[in-house]
Image 1 (spheres, helix red, strand yellow):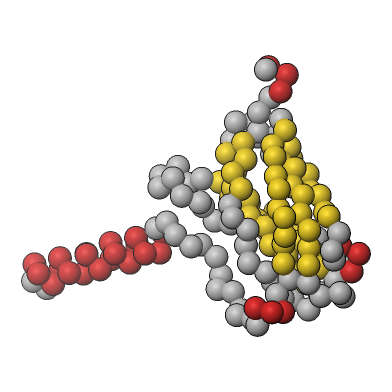
Image 2 (image 1 turned 120 degrees about the vertical axis):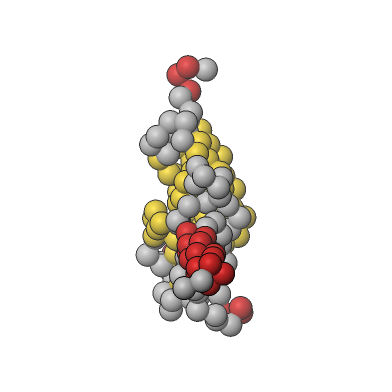
Length: 145
């Protein structure tokens, strides 16, 4: 193997490694569905009080039932981008939740650690809505303020 060929091989290995481990979208592909059939997460409001992230929202969609999915990740310390998203909470779709205001309290557990959350609606038929904008939340100790 000559020097040029060895250089190309090393460059391809480095490029492949960067593509696999680099920053960017880190989730499985989503199935495309008719936009009119997607459940919706409306009026998402949030605030952090101490170590609690409080979210309020309204769900719209199938009258048979709509629920929510919440994913969480941490900031990757090397690239300062979101790490791998993991399912944090999933509410079973319920007909009583359609059109009414919902509330979720999320314990941030680790004081001073920054988390990112995203939320979306899901219905009983498996249709999923779009992800919300990322929510940044860091727990703080209210007793020291």
